[in-house]
Length: 280
Image 1 (tube, rainbow, N blue to C red):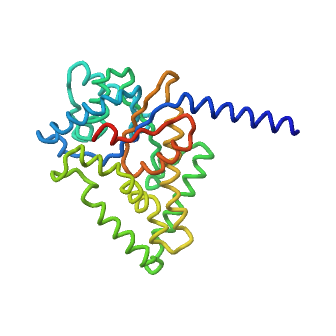
Image 2 (cartoon, rainbow, N blue to C red):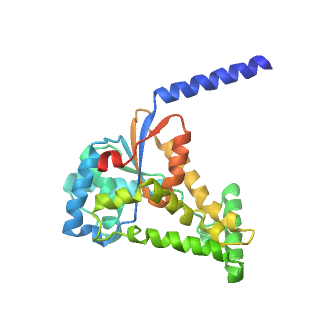
Image 3 (cartoon, rainbow, N blue to C red):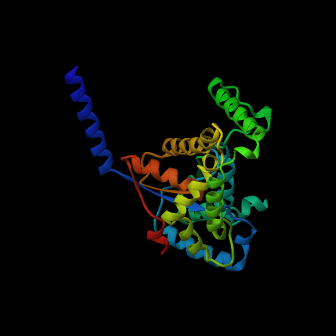
């Protein structure tokens, strides 16, 4: 038994040493969700400057906040843009950060796969027709559905006033940067979103908010729904990495940055690259 334990320890040590020597680089670029403002002449100039800087990172793969089911759509958009320089006609597809940053950068880098989705959306419990057939997934779906029903039924009297005040305080701090605006350039906006303090504050209100303001015994469970999504995103990303990939760019809503960074930091095979190394 002792020999087996020693062998296992030596095997794990060998694996971790090897992984650390061959670390992939991953940059997690937290963003807001772009809107029609990005199409203005000023923002397009700022975008070109941003893309020139990100291009120097030279990622081999670009992962986006879309599920794998949408890969064929985004591949079609990428090919159309690469060949004809045509943007999607649909305003949402045209104006969001996936096309404006992800697709345009992939085109500059001539990436074969364009952009690739790694998202895992929260269960849509408002539409029972979307309940999954897989037993394990259905069990979680029903768990989330019941939790949300309980939350709606609760009264405001269970709110933690002190936690609610703290939540509002941090939300007010973040309001100037949670949407595109004309006050900040695109680069400055992204630098602000990817500042370590901002990343923590976003996690505080977006991922632990239910625990701050909900005194009932389901506050932690409600927060865990969003946290599970981040874990699933991370798992999807690991699965999607090509064998010869050395650098990865992940373009995602900044609320996901904190947990994704924690998970990649734990993984011995990855080294986190700060966006500021290229944007400043």
